[in-house]
Length: 457
Image (cartoon, rainbow, N blue to C red; front, side, top):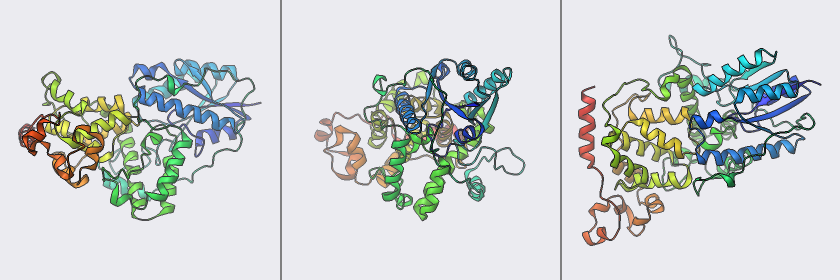
């Protein structure tokens, strides 16, 4: 009886899972394994919102496996030690894993290959599991990756994606598999109260419902802050509870401008993966435009605190930051807006904002979080690095009657219409009754400081 191990990482699903399918073809039995690696904690990746969502994902994955005759084996400890222990215990000859692009994923793969090789166990690494197109599959002439999105998108769109794989009907596992208990979301302290339910089942249900009602109008409404018309699928993609290959396939079947716009967003995710795969140092260092003149953190303590707490005095910025704290998620347009405000209006290093996002975002990952922050800060792949998003202009365009602001900023719920975006213009007696702060900075002053500093670069 031959045995193969499937090491789940950021691919917590059964539908369209090439490593699982390969293991089922290669062996009589498989061991579906997830390792609760303390290295994740040491690296600061296990923030409460992601721990809670992960618990949902693992419980859902286990339930799906059990319906097919299997179960999920949970082990707790250093990943190489635990994988070696499992392969020895069940006499497995192969370990299957999805390829990753972060420095942590590369290091894990290297250590697994070294640790398993001595015992004759083969490590099989599968591409295009976490992304639709594998990093490095398309490259420009004379470079190992695309540094600008539009030409990447053109090439990416010409790629023939594999057809999504169905979930297996049966998963046969060795008798008597023993592991640690599944993590319990209820035991995770500090998770956001509005955090959504995790897991493949929830993700597939969300996509099915949204594709029927929201996909067709996505091109027109994805920036509508109050309309909340985005898919909200990013947490499920981050944990691999949904397959990007399947999402692209189903969107293209749907067709239309909304589907095209949605596929473009999936491509942005792949674009960032291929950038970081080629330039792993970009998770902590400026990717393109080196910039060392940020305000020191000690000199911006009060401004940073106001930004984090949603008390900047700019309602649309504050609404977004409060949504983040309550839901562990933020509308994409709002992410761009608050990142521009921190890096260009307050003139604070993008790494400070990126760290705060990673502390709270349920979809927070090194690839998209860091590179999106760099794009906004002007140190990344944006071809217009000096662009500044004015929060008042953005608010009036994407939240014209102030519904989004009133949803999240309780102090301003009684302010009618677009006046909510400029509470400092209200009559003094009304303004004094709001218990809402004055702006931390005049926008013109912030813009002048940014332009002066960048003029010296």
